[in-house]
Amino acid sequence: IHYASQDGSQIPGFLFQPKHTNRAGVVNPHGGPSDQYGYHWDIFTQYLVAKGYILLAPNYRGSTGYGRDYERLNYDNWGIGDTQDCLAAGKFLKTLKGIDANKLGIFGGSYGGYMTNCCLSRDPDEIYACGIAKFGDANLVSSWAQCNRDLRLYSEIFLGHPATHHQVYLNGSTLYQAENIQKPILILHGLEDDVVPPQASEEWVEALKKYGKTFEYKTYSQEPHGFLRQANQMDVYTRMERFL
Image (cartoon, rainbow, N blue to C red):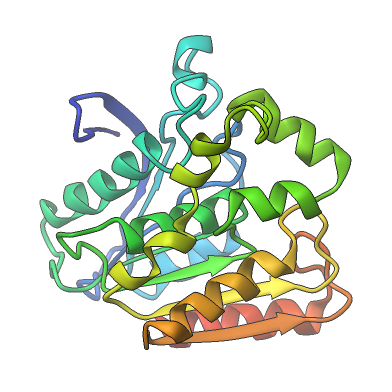
């Protein structure tokens, strides 16, 4: 499907609809950001749909597969235009038959987790009732300093070097909008992550504590960027379903 973002841009995405809806909807932004949600087997999506959730996986601006111009729309713009695309995804879900507008959630991993943090902290309309951030970022500056070399260079392709583009990094860091969060958030992170360092979630949690926000926070030892051990995967998905 395509839906309109705040600035009128047409955003492509994949819409999954159950046979019998539970009247709740979830938005699942992919990681990357230079990546895409495509035609592949996604077991957790299928599980949620089987449980009655309507799910939208948006290919927000910056995604691959739609031309170079579209892919570069979030250069120097992390957390701004792409966040509006993900907020607009929730507004689109509200228009669908069988949806309770008060039962919308958002979840994602890596950049999708960052999009969750962005949407909950930059959502004056309170579109989402909750969010789940798996190994998502909150402080682009400190994460650049602590991640592995490949990811530092990857970030600089989009945002430049923080020494010369410091404000761009600050503009994209949700750490400074923690007081705006009005809805509960589940934060999950592996302690061996060198792509989005676990300190990013630690800083995020401390900011949420400072402002008295509602959250659940769980870390996993011996897990890198993603959850690979079966026992941890089961714990992650169980927590996610319960939280939703």
